[in-house]
Length: 200
Image 1 (cartoon, rainbow, N blue to C red):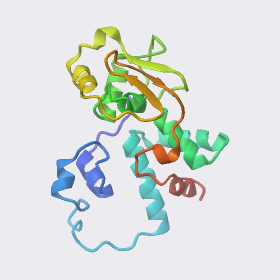
Image 2 (cartoon, rainbow, N blue to C red):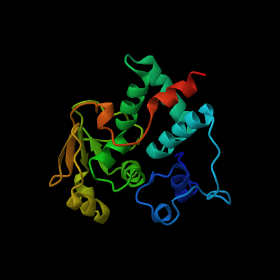
Image 3 (cartoon, rainbow, N blue to C red):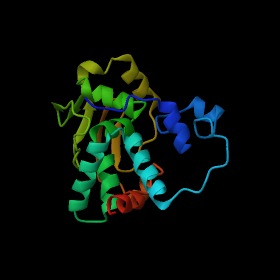
Image 4 (cartoon, helix red, strand yellow):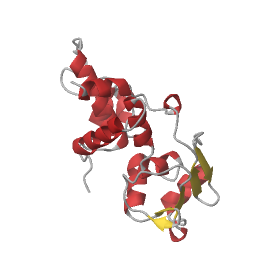
């Protein structure tokens, strides 16, 4: 299954954000990677700013270029503001929902739980991270997987619950209540810049 396998901390430092979760490298070196990282940064072109925003969204949600382009084209065909629809579709991915519910500590861990068959959607096993969760779908950890140490640790930590999700940590189960409003999504992504990039 295709996924980004390159250096994570360099990416986090490039965007100055902990894209892949807490980053000690970002705390120690809060400047871009490379020999000119500490030097003066020249002013970025409009295209560079738009491209950077798209790359940030790709890395944040764990998509490769073709997957992201296909998702954008799908969002563009739907009714509504394309940038907002794109963010809602990214948030509706199964691996992201598992992460938001707190069953996975990071999106990468959540993705692994999905691909290894530890997650059920409406009582059926789904092992496709990009599966689009629908409103009112019930997502839960498979009964025989609830005793796996990382899953137990994550459910006991009981992370922040988002308003578009309903989570029962005792039963390791949750429900996708509604699509999130754009201003509720905590990721620092300017979707309009991505729309402008693909509109060129």
